[in-house]
Image (cartoon, rainbow, N blue to C red; front, side, top):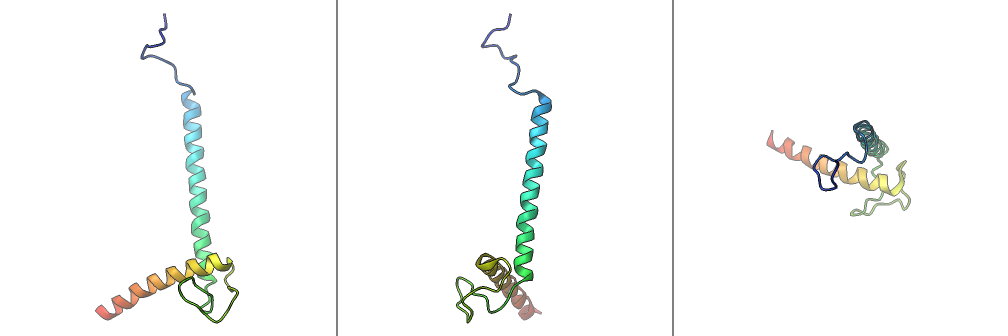
Length: 93
């Protein structure tokens, strides 16, 4: 007979369901990563030097970036970080 405390209990979901949900979760995470990277690329592509960045005040009040203030902040920070790294490399050469 099957005892409640036995180690041979059936799982809540069959193995097929578990694999199905795991693959759907992986697909969902992949789509989220694609959307995140796409928004970063769009923000950098539509970068305008006159856009306000949270640590640097500029002449325009409204951001001209396609993604608005989010895009201007992200692209400003990323371009300043990578620009700083490339200028250090130029000094080393």
